[in-house]
Length: 448
Image 1: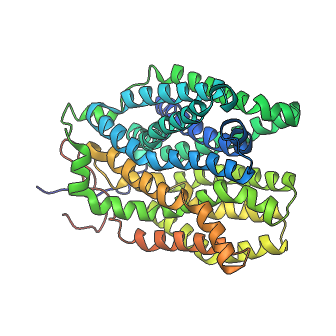
Image 2: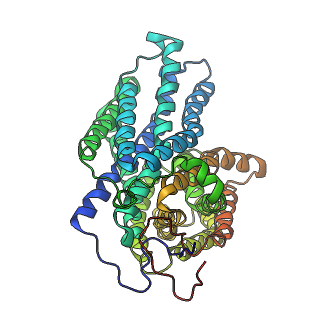
Image 3: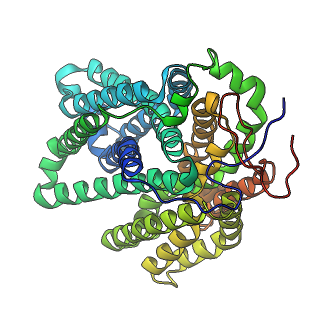
């Protein structure tokens, strides 16, 4: 059987139409889960020292913090399992049921975190309950972002680059929201009150946002592409993905290492690194990172839009190459305080936006509808586990082993170099799956 290769959204030279009002609505609602996911992640990091004192009291503050961050790591470790299970359900029963179910479970867990009795009240049971709740969140999060990407590109297949860019932009909105909530709590409450219950307010606010997300998602339609399969679903999508798309999963996971590695550094390592090791004023560091978020949000939307007009893998490749070249000078400037911090972060946001605005649609390009959710989930969670989950630890070890405060640049260069090389293993497009509408062959590309 002949198949054609064509990335979602590339139309063989025909101009892609704009997003309709209905498509905008579907994509924006789909993006809410990603916002909540990163909101919870960042809030936990902001209040980790308070959570450590409440649930893992220890004479050594270091051991208490290690326990709190271990709980965060557990959420990362279980994400791939959640991605496998939820994506398999999504490829068998539809994207919508998984969307609705995951937001309900994540919201419930977030609300429970906000009211969970501490160690003083429940003893070890409180610590175990915290671990279980974070595991539940991690399990659901493993399917949330892949599901949102899948739904968005299927809701607007001819504008998949922009649609996926909107999903990623929502992640930045979640981070900004967490930053604002933290600032408000630290401003309004005393240090003692913030430690006692301020962090609970942050989680409860996240739970309220989750309820609002569920309310908006409850009437969400099924993905148009999934509906067009007319029940021709694969009953074992995970096995099918490994058997027939294993190379695509590996190549895709390595290609998006540029996203996973840079995000792991920016969100997991950079905040404490700037203040504690490079001695920037906390306010200066916060302003620079917020400027980065704003600039990169606009930049990634522009990159997503451009990715519907030119091959988006080329944009991702260009970003990875620039990051390989510029990461060490960036860190040297950070360490030496030779360039204004906000200027550095704005420039970083511009360069990285080429990758952050295209990685999701590049990922979606690699898999046909029947296994798209599973393929995206496997690739995404594997890359995030390896390159994001271990980024703070590896960056810290590099500094200790080399004695250089600029050593985290080596991790960024390594992740981006891997992505750059792996991007050449990506096919020019995806293989059309049975039951899909015929697609245009890329100009000059042979039939397979």
